[in-house]
Image (cartoon, rainbow, N blue to C red):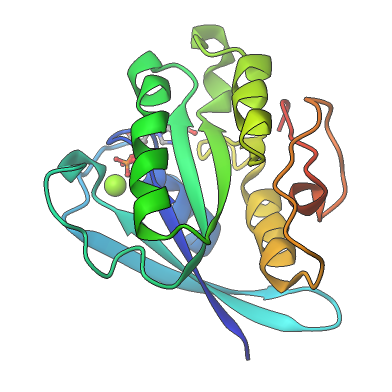
Length: 194
Ligand SMILES: Nc1nc2c(ncn2[C@@H]2O[C@H](COP(=O)(O)OP(=O)(O)O)[C@@H](O)[C@H]2O)c(=O)[nH]1
Ligand SMILES: [Mg+2]
């Protein structure tokens, strides 16, 4: 079975561990425990004509830029760059993460994720602004909620299609309109309502 390494990056508290846990175990935990070092888990994805395995790594964001995270990014095909739609700092720091990713794994595709979409009443980053930012860089953009699960499976299925695609990588994001297609990331259709 083909195996692909996926890395989840972003500031502490944005929901990286929750995203991993929600996808792999189908659960959500409201209590906050800081990830020490790095954690990983894997899940098979059935794409119809083939089944692949995603091995998903979750980084301790708090250590950002302070340690050489040797080996963490190595071999990653996709980096999921997460921010919290209610947290402006996590949004502002995306460019720093982008810099680190482009140094460590320049060939990886980046998918930007606006998490905590269930907290829409506390939103400070408009979906369109996030989408525009991603589009300019040819990254996919989706919004997720680890609390409700909205958008989470679609994100990883989209990534599975992205890594198995024989087409040239397209990292273009188009609009904020929702799409039900499983390869929405490949086509570059971002999503604003999970
Ligand atoms: N309301 C809401 N809370 C979330 C969501 N995702 C994560 N959280 C909470 O945010 C906090 C930080 O999550 P965590 O996964 O540990 O973040 P990490 O530091 O990026 O790994 C925890 O209290 C989570 O329960 C979400 O989608 N919605
Ligand atoms: Mg964590």
